[in-house]
Structures are given as structure tokens and as C-alpha cells.
Image (cartoon, rainbow, N blue to C red; front, side, top):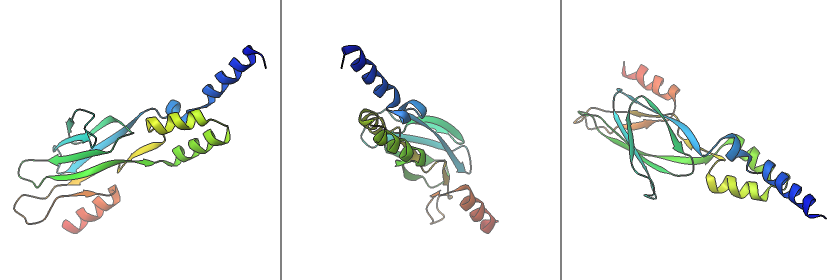
Length: 156
């Protein structure tokens, strides 16, 4: 095999590899919300590699999809709540990894694995139900919009 053909083959392998890194990127769009709104949300990765970030609910941010994050919701007069925002293998991430393996994209599989591109951060959206301080009940993270609506209908 000539050097030119080898160069073309290697270039083609890199071009089709790491599909998730190219199509999804390293960051995930995460939405934080709370009931009541205007709570302070702060998050930092559990490895301590990234600086703590924050916003007020509702907010949507771009966060590296590779890491697990400690997330805290706080609002004056309410119980704070902490939760984990974790990378979970996404449905399209699974398909991309299978494509990497089937097409011989070992390099692509390694790149997608190391960047976290085949993951999505969960739960997303992350919604906190903040309970008034002194009520004796803890604040909690709502699993889905539907669950939040069900809780609100029972409370009302």
C-alpha cells in the first residue's frame, strides 16, 4: 500500500470516527427550574476540576456532559435541596457508539467515550420543589413536568 493510500485511509477513519463528539459536542443544554421560582441554583463537578457556577431559576445553561455535578437549590425562607446531575448514556449515544464499533471507528469510540459526547445529563430539566422552612418537610427534586403538575393539583 502506498503512503498516499495509507494517508487517505487514515484520514477517512478519522473523518467517520467520533460521530457523537462532532454531532452532539462536549456540552449539554440543561434547564434548572423551581417552584417557587427565582431560587439560586449552584453546581460544581464532583471531582472538583471545574469552578462552581450559578444562576437563578428558571435558567438554561451549557454544561460539560462528561462530569457528574452536585447541584444545590436555595431560596430565602425555604428548605434547600441538593441533588446529582449525572451523565447517562443517551439513546443516540448508544447508536453512535455502535456505529463507531461497526465501522471500525475504534478511535471514534475512544474519543466519544473520553469526551462524554455519548451521554446526556439527567435529570433534565432539573426541577426543585422548595418547601417553606420550618414546615418539617424537606424540599425535593421533581422527576418530570408531569409529576410536578400532579403534585401541584394535590396541593391546591
